Image 1: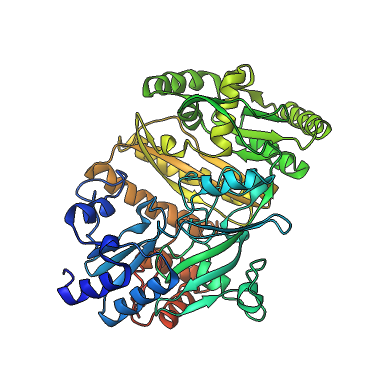
Image 2: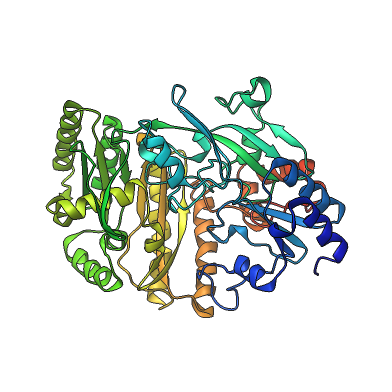
Length: 516
């Protein structure tokens, strides 16, 4: 279907002719699925129109019109990932890029309030001027800085900067019927310091393990926790991306990539580093990811990958130390060195012995800016099985088990034998864990069918071996698979969706729908 003249004019009257379009060239640009899919799935169904609202009042009017016209709407911030698609005609896209203000940075209480169009690098730069930092989505600082719209919100800084669910404070929400709701302290005092109460809280209902991804209204402002930053208030760079070096990072920073003889030793190292609370960043980085981050060209990436395959084992992690004083840095460095000795960790000399490479890598991982280079490599893009449970070791074991299924895909010639083992990530100094099994492939119909079979087997492993609900679980199909094994949560999730969205106006293909 396409919007009729009455419908188009009604939406146009809200935002003005400059901020709405149904030009096919514009519509197709919003439906491209970023190259991860096999043909003919390169494009999702086209939206009926792209609308760029600027205020809450405009969004509320658009949402109410969508209900009136029996259309669906789907809001997105930066649009990174396949979760912004519509799965059928009859949906308008709300692109929130014009809502790009940093509302407040509260230094005393260490939180920031942002609109969804603010990206991570913008907020981080402003926070660093004040001696603070914010968690960044692992997909890169090109993603929204809002803690309510970034999937799980895990990232390179999550060891010291937590993740989306834990960082989200007060919230401003426009429901699928167009009502404005203020969560927590915002609704009672007008302040942003708390996301819950007074009384029963809706925060968990609208966020959950994975955010609704456009399936439960529109989140227009959110407060996120901030953390101390031990570095300078501004960072000067020399060179041109990706070959640049920060010159103003002081001597209180250290970066290392360690290689361990086996998973048990790497696990011990992560636990010990977490218990000592010495790492500013701690993240499992396999050989392919390390090569992608260090290289400045495709040719260099291939060369480094081959070199690292000879130097590194399958069990690697990256750690950054940030000292708040000379004595603090000295202490943390000594502890790290002792842990490496105790767990037989071998440092990658490409980083430890080359200050320029180390400085460049450190800044790329503190931002982070190299995530897209890890995904779309010279040797094919990667997809992966994602784990995330309350217990770090349990998550790591799940990823190891799914790796056995990956090996069968390699044997069947469906994907590359990339020598890329699972990577694990400690979050909040070990209180939570994240991991991914990376699968390198060039999309085509034959290996796409293999990927779908892999996902089915990975789900079966998670359920039968009681590994919990992984971070990739969204959509009716996935929730209906896991729900019966986890206290029938899918029934309650569907009731929440139906209560707030009785008309199914908020497109829920990547959340859950109101089906019976």
